[in-house]
Image (tube, rainbow, N blue to C red; front, side, top):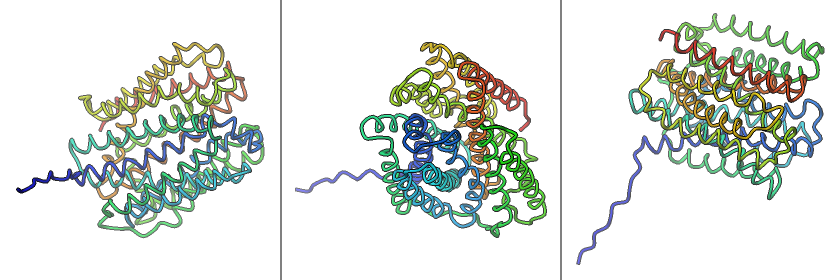
Amino acid sequence: MSSITEPTPVIAPGRRTLAVASSAPLLVLTNFTVPTVTLPLTARELGAGPTGPVWILGAISLGLSALLLVSGGLADDYGRKRVLVAGTIVLAVASVVAALSTAVVVFVAARLVQGGASAAMLAASLGIVGHAFPSGTERVRATGRYGAMIGLGTTVGPLLSGVLAEVAGWRAVYWLMAACALALAVVSARTLEESRSPAPRRFDVPGVVLLSLGVAALLTGVTEGRLGWSRPVVLVAFAAAALLVTTFVLAERRRAEPLIDLELFRRPVFLVATGGALVVGAAVVGLLTYLPTVLQTTHGLTPLETALLFVLWSALSFVSALLSRHLRLPTAARLALGLALTALGFAGLLGLGGEFVPALVVGGLVVSGAGAGVINSSITHLAIESVPSHRVGMGSGANNTARYVGSSLGAAGVAGVIGGLGAQQGVMVAVAACIALTAATAVAALVTRH
């Protein structure tokens, strides 16, 4: 008798590539959000001073912002798989250092390195997706799924951190991040195919140095400004940022192979993608990064309770990103819709600094979460559509740089407003500003020519 063997299911190369590449933003955003619900615990155990909590939250954004554009160029020119694997290994090592930290300066340094590693992972992974899905409906579907991982990561991070903090302490989540990063590095090295630009450029050392230092100076000024905007360290940081960024622009205009092609800013779709990412970082990520601290210090919620509340927002973000491809709208119009929904949802959070009204807060998080998912899928698609096909890493780097510069500015700004005005008035002012910014950007995206 002959036996019949069932064929082993084979995952199509494109689907396998998307699954592995999409794991990078999932891990990055999970790691990015883990301190949000344990900030009071972490700051207390590490003996953080007045600006310590802001640095604990913002250090990873600084690393991301400074190196995303650099990572995009490296991925395009030297290999997207190579940059992804290297970044994931560095993330694993930095996570171990964070778990072992006994002082704020060590923890902040570890998060800063995590940010640089995350920059490499984000820029390279989106470049891999853009290369694997060159155009059409498949690219829309792929970028939607990739963008959904941002929402899923923001769901997993706070929840995982809150649960582990309850049962094993706040450090446990960083050990888990190290293990997950190491596993992703191994899988990526074994399964992904290498891709790079057919016309690699010389490494722009002056551009890298000027941009990285300029971003670092800007975010240092914003963070230290919490203790007084007229302090010498703040004024020097802002002056240095202005000088470095201006010099960067002038230097890039003269280079034949710049870190970022400034001609891209003549493309309306690139402006929409990059400007939208900056606003999303400042008004959405920045606000929601700091609100868990308000819930715990003002309303007495535990880290786990806070995490469960914000799961509503991030879960809706994940689901709506997956479903957004069914919206029969141009990508910029979908972005405008997402921003409008976010602004509407934030209206329910205006009174959060005073009385805690569960129905308003839950409703606001649900509506704004749905809007965030539409935003994530739209911006991800615009980021790689707005640049030439061989420069998808550059598009990814520019877009994510704007997002995380915005998130650093937004988180520090929200913290400064709430710290200066008090919880009740400060939350109202901060949320109202975020509503105005997202609504104005929605209008700009809708009317911009493409």
